[in-house]
Image (cartoon, rainbow, N blue to C red; front, side, top):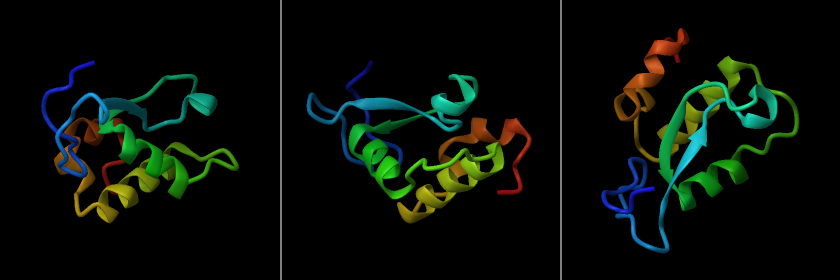
Length: 93
């Protein structure tokens, strides 16, 4: 994976210790890797998993809402940072 550029949520530049990761918007444990991916740094990825623990199955709408809320907590609007998420049919979030 690339190490150039910066995290779209926290704007910190990628480097060897802060690498980009692919976050599955629809968690693999429930949706088997089917669904959109978004790029974030490992710190943001870990923070999302901490802030939004997966204790029960989320609907796809809940997955998107949680990701949208997390983006807002970082001062970003989900569809501006990740425009490809508009195409999955839940653009009202």
